Structures are given as C-alpha cells and as structure tokens.
Length: 212
Ligand code: SAH
Image 1 (cartoon, rainbow, N blue to C red):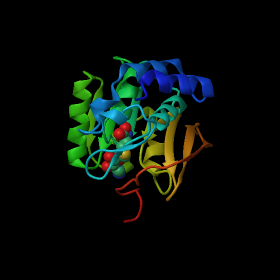
Image 2 (cartoon, rainbow, N blue to C red):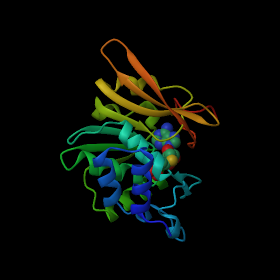
Image 3 (spheres, rainbow, N blue to C red):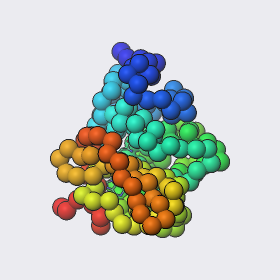
Image 4 (tube, helix red, strand yellow):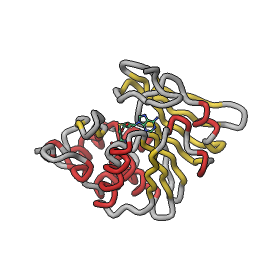
C-alpha cells in the first residue's frame, strides 16, 4: 500500500511540487478521514475516488497542484467552490493557518454535511462550510485573496472575478469533457490567464455552471 511519504517523494523527485507549506499540509492531514468506508486502502493511491451523491474526492496530485498554484500565505481569506469531501479544504486550511479563513460552498446538502463531519475529524476550525450555489461566489464575505473552483465550469463565472481582490489568484478548471486548469491573476484593469494543463473534474452546476 503506498504511503503519504511515497507520494511526497514522487512529487519532489519529479519536480511537480515545490511548495513546502503545501507538502507539510499534505503530511498533516489523513485523506481517509474524507473518504467513504471500504476505500481506505486507496488513500495514498494517486487517484480520485467515489464519495457520496455520485461525486468524487479529487486525486492527491490535483489537490496539491491546485494548492501550489494558489500561492497561499498565512492569514489569507479564501473561497472554495465545491466542498465535496472537504479534503481540499483541509489542505488549504492548514496552509493558511489559524489566522486564515476558508469559506467553502457546496451545492448538494448531503455533501455539505459530509465535508463538515470530515473536517471535524481533523479538528479544523478555520473553515466554514456553506450550502449554496458557489457558481455565484459568496458575496457575504467577499473580496477574497484566493478562489479555488473544484468542478469544471463552461466559462470563468463573472461573479468570481468580481469577488477576487486586486492581485488575487483564482484556480479553475474550464471546459467540458477534459478540462484545462486555468490560473487567473486579477489586476486593476485586466486579468492574466495561464494554462496549467489538462485535468478531469466533475461538472460545475448552478447558475454559472454547465447547462443541464
Ligand atoms: N474539493 C473536493 C472535490 C469535490 S468534487 C474534494 O476535495 O473532495 C466537486 C464538488 O463540487 C462536488 O461535491 C459538487 O457537488 C460540487 N459542486 C458542483 N457545482 C457546485 C456549485 N455550483 N456550487 C457549489 N458546489 C458545487
């Protein structure tokens, strides 16, 4: 059975991940706390796994690449769209530390509860799980230093750009079928977009999500 350490060694050797804080967060969180019964043995296989309601916990490499791309710093205010298992939320929460705050939105009520319960298992207190359509962002706590979307959007939702601070960073998969992961940097009068490669995510639903 592969261990956390095997994955970290692989990431270091391949040069895929250099962010020490992200790697420390990965070592500090038990992925099995965010999985369903009977799948424990796969916790440190580098694969996405089914959770409940037909959704998935993302692949460790994907979670980590997105975390690194966010260039997180201690104390930041972050918005996540798509809590799912809560695992990505847990990793971000560790990197931004106790003075940071993560708001994570989930459109399926059962999954919002699932994420909450899982985050409690890890004693994570700087995350708030919100049951809502995150394709519209979460105006109540905007603007954010960072935004991460963990489901594939047809286009970058405008409200998310609006709710990002100037100099803020957003990571979002865009497109149907196989998606491109896009890193957005917001400037005062423009946005820069960088392509981080191809990934596969479940579709974003809601107002600015995929057409049904
Ligand atoms: N970050 C998660 C990945 C979950 S998969 C993890 O670490 O496990 C993506 C999640 O996005 C699913 O749970 C899905 O229900 C949710 N989702 C899809 N559209 C959404 C929307 N408009 N608002 C909030 N959550 C959404």
